[in-house]
Length: 216
Length: 115
Ligand SMILES: Nc1nc2c(ncn2[C@@H]2O[C@H](COP(=O)(O)OP(=O)(O)OP(=O)(O)O)[C@@H](O)[C@H]2O)c(=O)[nH]1
Ligand SMILES: [Mg+2]
Ligand SMILES: [Zn+2]
Figure 1 (spheres, rainbow over the protein chains, first blue to last red):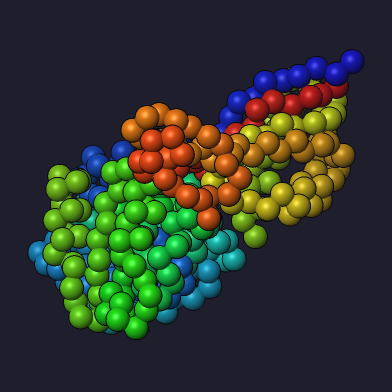
Figure 2: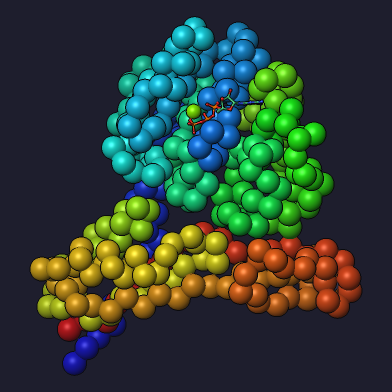
C-alpha cells in the first residue's frame, strides 16, 4: 500500500531563512545591502563605480560575485573603493549562504551600503534571495528591448530596472517605450532608470531612489 | 547547471521527510513550478535520476506541473491562460485596454507518494 505525504514546501525556504537573518543583522546596524544583477558585460561593475562616486560621503563595500576570478574586485579597489571577492566555483548565482560566509562581523558596522555584483546571468540569479534590501536588474541597450518577455522572472522580482549604456541608443533599434510597456505589463509599479556609465548620466536619480526607498 | 542545484535541494527535502516518516521507498514526487520558472525539464529528470541513485528515492517518478502565465485585464478583469508570453498581444480581447501578465518563479514540492 502506498501513502501520500504532504510536503508543501518551497525549495527556496531554507535560503530565505538565511537571507532574512542577513537582512536583520544588517538593519540592526543601519547597513543596507543592494543586489545588482544583469547579463555578462551589461555594465554592472561600471555602474557600481559611478554609483559609489555619486554616493559621495557614504561608506560603501562592494562584494563581487564571480565564477572564478577577481578581476572586478581588483578594478573596484584600483578606483579607490573597498571590495571583496566571492568565487562561486562554478555556481551560476549567489545564494544567501555564500553571502553569509563572505560577510565579516564588522562589515555592517563599518559600511552604510554593501553593493553586491551578482554573477552575470539573467536566469539563475532571479528567485535567489541573498538578503538584499533592494534587488536591481540591469539591461544594456545592445541586449534589446524584448528581454522582459524572455526573462520575465528577474524583471518581475526586481525592485528597480536600469537601462544601461544609453549612449548606444542612436546605434540601435532599442525602444525605451516598448521596454517600459513590457516591463509595466509584468509589474505595474516597476521603477525604471536610464544610465550611461560612459557619459556619467542617470546616477543622481538612482541615488535618490535608493536613499528614499531605504530611508537610508 | 542551475537545474542541479535545484535537484539537490529537492533531494535533501524529500529524503529528510522520508526519514522523519519512516519511509521505505519514495515512488513519486509532485512538484509545482510558477509560470516564469526557467528550468529545463529533461535536465531536471536526468539530474534527479543520477542524484537519487542509492537513496530511498531511487527510481522515483518526478511529476512536474508548470503553471501557465495568466493574462489579466486591469480594466475589465477578463483573464485567460496562455502558453508563451514572448509574442503575446497585450490588448484585452474584450475591452481593448492593456493587460498585465501574472506568474512567478516559485518552486514548490507538493507531496510524495511512498511505501
Ligand atoms: N559605451 C558604454 N560602454 C559601457 C557602459 N557601461 C559599461 N560599458 C563597457 O562595457 C563593458 C563591460 O562593462 P562592465 O562594467 O565590466 O560589465 P559587467 O556587467 O560588470 O561585466 P561582467 O562582470 O563581466 O558580467 C566594458 O568594456 C565597459 O567599458 C556604458 O554606459 N556605455
Ligand atoms: Mg563586472
Ligand atoms: Zn478588458
